[in-house]
Length: 288
Image (cartoon, rainbow, N blue to C red; front, side, top):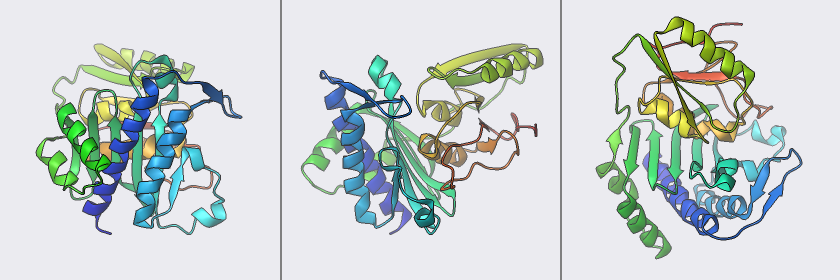
């Protein structure tokens, strides 16, 4: 299946899952907790089921947060796979601050080559793929129209529709070398991140700090609203794969903090190392 067709399926899946999530978001729902004490809602599972049903048609295996228990002996044979977070930012969902997303990535030979991030509340879509670059669309009317077409099981040229109403990333170019804009987690601050920000305040005249939930931090760097996203705390592969694809296709690098090598996927241990997202001219991680 060509990359354009895969982009079509992933965009369709993200929007359809986003509509399912919103139905739960605007209702009374209960919260359960997994064995690691992370929260889980019915929106997570419904989104997972929706995305899996659509992406399974591509005959590419799926690794999802809600279906993570696949033995590495099987996974390591996959040269291509979907990596999915059906509801990234469940804590933000529960807090009702609107900063949650649907993340879908296609990984080829351990590298993300396609990424879709959909923000259901704002009807904002970030998407990227090799040959398409990285783009952003924020058009609630178009998202509603696409949603209606999907529900009617029609097959519009969704990729052409979103391309015609989207803009290329980055939206902003860095011009002030004396300032630095850092984006970090709204719900997962760490002492290491605080130390990093303190160090940057010694290096730049002005340091701004933006807080954002879920994969939106990748998007803020990709579109030029932030300069650096240092992730100095735990994440899983499904938290980052789609964001990395979008960031890299916009000209950014996603490099491991300790080694300076690109962050890779479908590893035996799905827990990511610390990493930094930035543009090449801004900063590279140093070996520690």
